Image 1 (tube, rainbow, N blue to C red):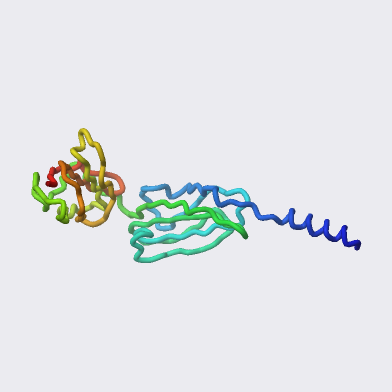
Image 2: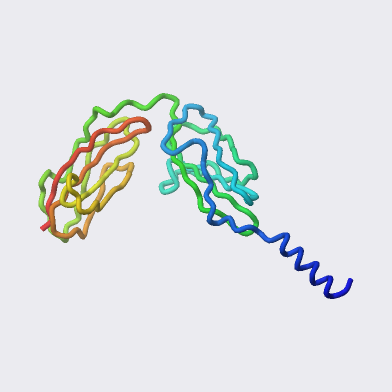
Amino acid sequence: MPILALALSFTGCEHITEVEDISDKIVVGLAPQNNTIVTDRDVVFTWDTVEDAENYKLQIATPNFANAAQIVTDSTMAVTSFTKTLSSGNYEWRVRAENSGYVTAYSSYEFILSESPPKDISNETIAITAPANNATFSTTDTINFSWETLEDADKYVFQIATPDFDNPTEVIEDEIITETSFSKSNMTEGSYQWRVKAKNAGYETEYTVQSFTIQ
């Protein structure tokens, strides 16, 4: 084969086999959706196809990836569904698309596997243990916020705002945590409110609100 023809042949092959960049694409999870309750132990995970993807990497952790006690699945597959038998508990699953040159970001979803429906906690009240309402602190203090555990709650929403939640100029903290305490330091002088509420898969309490001052 003439040299020119051979060069053109190689150029054509490179063009045909060029890998599509999928790194900006998003994998859309179909089920289980975020913050849903699953009652069947045989959980079916499904997601949308991503064009030009060759495989999908699926991971499942309990209770979540930030505080994983166990990674129950870490698999790569060409299909867009996967079935896993799980025990009752809190889970987070995530999936990304891959080809021979690129990967997408993970799309993550949390769910609860419960063989019984969650208890209605909407009429319960969070009991604050510290600090006392209207307490005063200095700018060098570390403030330890704490409250009693609420039975049948899975998580808590903790927030701090200044000067209050009715007319906030800034929401300083807005966290979802499983613990019943939170510490904050290096705060500037001013008036503040903090609040906390409990949640489970189906219900949530009202916020319990208290005030404090930094001077």
